[in-house]
Length: 254
Image (cartoon, rainbow, N blue to C red; front, side):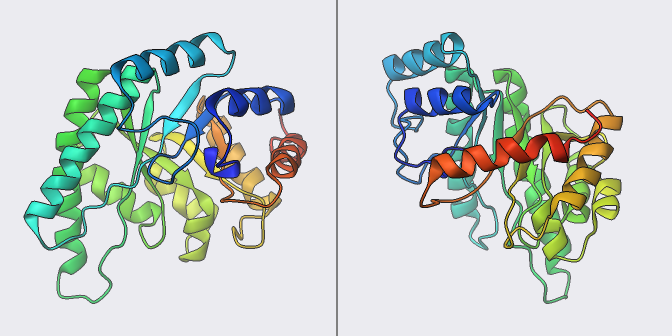
């Protein structure tokens, strides 16, 4: 993910990925990263990005903006939906097949607030998924903060499992919110299209948990990416090297 090296250009991210054996690059827009994959990119810029990713030896696997639909104001939610539609178009224009989306923060106060949030999210992502399907892009709803795998599964269910709405399984967030690996997997089995992970104390997902996650996904034939998410580290090269070196241990049955 570009958050590992926010100052790297598109070409530098590709070169670094190739150096350490990575197979794709994920781009986080809106964070003032140097890659240029942003809504402000012109038609010519988008063509250049698509060409660079196609011909540079390392494709773009995911575009990760931060749309949220937790505002009580319908107009603000509509503005978020309109922006998400633009990100879907950007992904399609640049040949990036996935767009990450959020479900958190979810209400925790009772009174039907969480159920109402599920309905709002299901409606919004149902509309966005229809647009994504036409564009040849898939949305991946991340298990993030208090939007656990259980919650993600419920949102997908209420949306009717649109063909273009899938899951980005970030195990560390599940563990921090009381879901172990197997419990989380039960709610999203067969719908995972992307994975975020990191090796750090903050993540709480140590190697044994990541090994179990890898085994579960391997057994269902998962063919998506495992994207390294470390935000603004002091030494990007060290992070890339560390995670590349750890991968054979995580995928121990490869």
